[in-house]
Length: 190
Image (cartoon, rainbow, N blue to C red; front, side, top):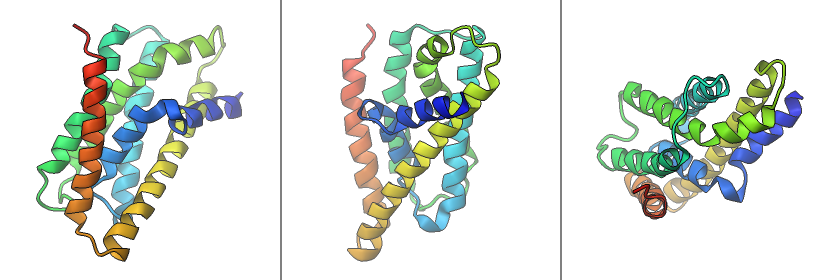
C-alpha cells in the first residue's frame, strides 16, 4: 500500500499534468544554488508539510473549499512567489523565516487542489497514515528531483556561462510568473 501511494505522490509532481506544481517549485528555489542546499531542503519540506496538513484536514472533512477557488488560488501562489523573488536584492536572502512560512502556506493551498482526488483514492481505507505518508514522501521525492534538475541547469548558466545569479533568478521567476498568469486568467472564478 505504501509504495502505491508513494507512486501516486511521485506522479503528482513528475507528470505533464503537474505543471502548476513544477512552476511553484521553480519559483520557490529560483534564488538558490547548490551551496544553499539546506535552505532548499527546508523550503521543499515546508511546502510538503503545508500540503500534508490540508490533505489530512480534507480527508477528515475538516476543511473544504470550492474547487474553482482552489484551482484559481494555485497559480496565484506561483505569481506571488515570483513577485516576492523579484523584490529580493540579496541572493539568497539572509532571513528565510518568511520564505518558509510562505512555502508552508502555499503548500496548504496546493494540497487542497489534490485533496478530493486523494480522498477518492483512499476510499474506505481503515488507516490513512501509511497512504498519506507514502503519498507525501512521493511528493517530496518528486520535488527534490525537480529541484536537482533546476539547480543543475542554474549551475550551468551561472557557473558555466558566467551568467549573473540575479538574472538567472529573474529569468526563472519571470517564466514561472507569466506561465502562472495565463493559468490565473484561465481559472478566473467569476
